[in-house]
Length: 511
Image 1 (cartoon, rainbow, N blue to C red):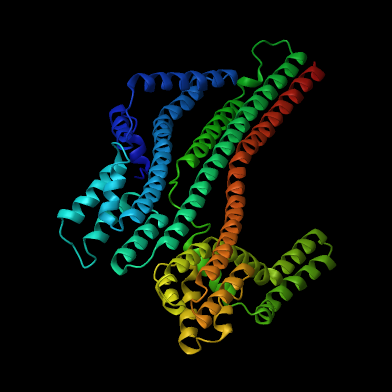
Image 2: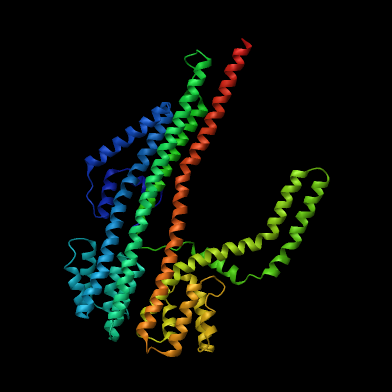
């Protein structure tokens, strides 16, 4: 339900279009509330503009920008509530479906029981559509009506956890067997998933509050600085029409400053509207693939030799500049030469760090799927099946693992070579366990599974820490934006203020 692009934003200026968009998210649009909110926003921003004594033209520019972005903020408010409800509905659906399936053993019967739990809403409509397709529909492809029916729910609630639940139930109904242990594992995983989701949103709300405080402090600080400069100027001149606020540079910088703060506020608000169900990777897939290839193809000595010639040329040039007396230039070139020499190593370290962080995000998901597959498959078959839906960062490693298992399935090194170029001690323990499974069979499967699950949980906790650090860094960047804008504004105002002071003092000296 993404509504992006300039045209879509312009369409929202029409209240009827905004009303339709709000209705899409399942909420009722109040014209009176909307009008009151618009008036309050214009009065508030207009009051701030008057504090900075903006001239009518500049004040109108700020107010028009507010009118343009306000419908987007209104829609984002409803989207935030919609995403929260969608997340809660999806988690409740997954839990109740698993409980119902434990009792009935049939997907259709479980869906009917789940349908009775939910009132009117999107989740109930999706469940009813799935049931209708399963009971009265005809298969569109070779997957069958059960899988096609569940996919109708997955299309609206796109989530890896939901797909895992459906896959587990489909396999249980198709192949039979005891699924109590698997259902318990999935329920525990859903509980951790819920906890992560609510913790993330709580962190975002706190960060948004900090961002608003940062914006307010920036406004107060810059306004106070302007009034102080104006008071200082009035101490040295009695001319009533001379004011810092009337200087064109001050007017423009004040308008730009307020527009920047408005953009930062919108960016902070939009961070609250992300899809709760989607667990995004830390980095872009293309970047991770490039970084992975860089790490795997890195040869320390070869890279160092390759950089010696350009680094040597830059260093010799630095020496020449130093000897002729251009010492600052020589020092700068020497630093550049060192960076050229160290660039491959620096790039390698950055790539290794980023791929390791991405692996910590992907491996718990893959291992959890492995735990479920091992309930009914041997290790080699489970790995082969898991590779079909594994995260992209694991694609090459899993392909190589499958190839090694075909050649030498009994050797421990076949398993321990998995992701061996990255510092993943928890993963090494898990791979040793998988080798033990393969060698010893499933005689003590419950104990073995519990140990493997403990490792998966540890890796998930490590992944959560890394993700939290990355999120905190991004939100702190937003927090820093108003500070940077205020710094630029203060520098501009102080420069203009000092220039005016010097002009006044020069006039007094000439008199």
